[in-house]
Image (cartoon, rainbow over all chains, first blue to last red; front, side, top):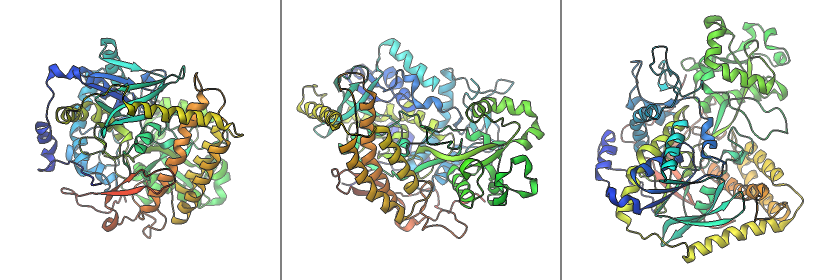
Amino acid sequence: MALNSNIPSGPLAQKWDQHKFDLKLVNPANKRKFQVIVVGSGLAGASAAATLAELGYVVKCFCYQDSPRRAHSIAAQGGINAAKNYQNDGDSVHRLFYDTIKGGDFRAREANVYRLAQVSVNIIDQCVAQGVPFAREYGGLLDNRFMRAARRDSSCCSAPTRP
Amino acid sequence: MLGAYSALSRQIGLGTVTMYPRTEMLDLVMVDGHAKGIITRDLANGRIERHAADAVVLATGGYGTVFFLSTNAVGCNVTATYRAHRRGALFANPCYTQIHPTCIPVSGDHQSKLTLMSESLRNDGRVWVPKRKEDCGKTASQIPESDRDYFLERKYPSFGNLAPRDISSRAAKEVCDEGRGVGPGGLGVYLDFSDAIKRLGEDKIRERYGNLFDMYECITGENAYRQPMRIFPAVHYTMGGLWVDYNLMSNLPGLFVLGEANFSDHGANRLGASALMQGLADGYFVIPYTIAHYFATSKQQRPSTDHPAFQQAEENVTGMANRLLGIKGKRTVRSFHRELGKLVWEHCGMARSQQSLEAALKRIPELRDEFWHNVNVPGSGSSLNQSLEYAGRVADFMEFAELLCTDALARNESCGGHFRVEHQTEDGEALRHDDQFAHAAAWEYKGLGKAPELHKEPLVYEEVHMSTRSYK
């Protein structure tokens, strides 16, 4: 069996944008003809089920808990990484990408990690739009703190540690 | 999680998502080489159901509970991904497991889970143990500053107490192995806030971490404003998972794997606060694009649930349940899980060696054999039966543990969370062998008791230069 990772060609920073353009689309009117099973309702499962449903697919979501809210992801309250650079301390997509690759001891797939760092910026906006109660500074700006083994004073938005 | 949950709830309210809580996936259904459905069991009434779809997305988390004690919820399990593995999905890098340095130490044999103290505590807490073994019996306040060893600050001056998880955990294990651990059994190190309290005041620390200090006090009965916390590493996250391509699709067309369940983004060690980032990135921003491409290009019909593949998978599920119920042995499922977890923790935990892994690989099949002859699963399959649910999950762990150790044995180098004692530098840091192991190891299931087949995906770095990690 040959493993094909299907990593797009082109420069690292442009792979995902180019790939999104190259991927085939489903006509919005046809989306309701496709059914998707999502197993698990934690961060990955709930966000996938909600997004796919909002796009128009017919989604069935399964979890073994009493309620999707009981997924183990609810325990994750320490914070979320994102290359937001709110504090102007030199954070960037490339730096988050590099920290993650290095932190993983150079055993992760480069293109996937770069994409992760790129979309991290969108996640915070998405969460804020959904009303996630991030910790905030007195003036209302998102609170940041140092988290990911990087020598800057801050590199991530903190999540609702203080409910 | 609250954001994703409310977004999901909104769609459930709109009728675009049908939610099946208390329902466990027990098999994956493959039709003409594509993933087209699942078999589930309703945990409340035992009903087995068939569900067909155009694609299946697994977002079922990691396998940390193979160690029995971990910071994961007790219900976390490997069943969904392992059963997909048995249907042909490759399992990649199972040996990459993360041991979190900041957990409340084990207090006795009665425990069924461990509690994580947030990593953020290491922003303001200083980690230390006594310099001399003889001082371990004293209370922290009896040990003067000059007799304390702030070992993370000493070994990693530039990153100090915020050194990455694998590094910090191993450093804590080293000082405990030297006999300098604190607390019952010598398996703990201090996380001391007294300097931060002096600098910022107790109120500020309470404002930042009050919930964690309260939780710590509820569990240990100790006030961490007055005396240092005691912490010890514990299993927390698993970087390995089902192999996926750039589109997050496994080698089985139509089977997508997201979040902790896949292997793709964290390499051999995950950084703090990156699990949320990956789970949400996969679900919100990647799968919506890539699944459309699969639909637009595969042109596969959605099968009816009367298809023989559903019949066969359902028989597989009911057959396994009947077999478990029919054993009527003497030992509880939990006692097997506890024994397996202890075995895996001791032989394939924070430090691994050829010898320990070979011993585990000899013992696991024996334990599995005993499980299938001597486990006691009371009740029936046609009603609520938590022993049966648990037995199915532990049965999968009995096979998965072997895969985990096989991978750890094959990866004859140290990297990230995978530390082979044979491969370390003079200072005890992990020693990688990029010439031989710069690949993802994806294992193919070949049948129970048969050696899995290894497929390698070479890791090619175009942009970054592979260097030795140093946090000194």
